[in-house]
Amino acid sequence: MANLRKGRLDTFGDLVTDADSAEWHQQRNLKIIASDISAGEMRVLPDDLPLYGLDASAFSVAEAVRLSMSIPFFFEPGDLAGNTVVDGGILSNLPLWLYDAPVGVRPVCLTIGFQLVDRQSGTTVKKRLARSRSSAALSTP
Image (cartoon, rainbow, N blue to C red; front, side, top):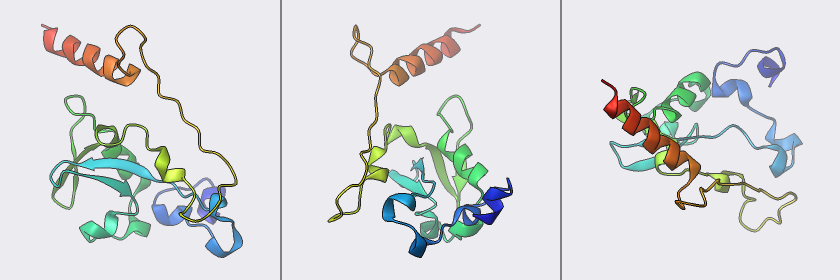
């Protein structure tokens, strides 16, 4: 955390907290969702990086964010040890489960999230925006 206090944040190792000095709800480290379409599975970064033979503490936070925002047809897919990785929202659009209390532990604070839905169509706002952008991209001369 010293690097974070100095305004320097490059890798997940820069975000490490002292787990012994904090309650579980104060140990919520940064988690980024990505979709590994080569394996057909959702990945939580940095937790799943060892599956690719990568050192989580040395992995770039910026690269993890880029992998997670690689929306198909809009941004080039990312590469993680030879696997194609795209937007995490494809497999987990609202990943609030990341912040749930561990099993058997009573939550100290609630995790609350909102998913916006268009009343007329019944689709989420994200889906509606994605459809309008893709149809605009396809119909552009």
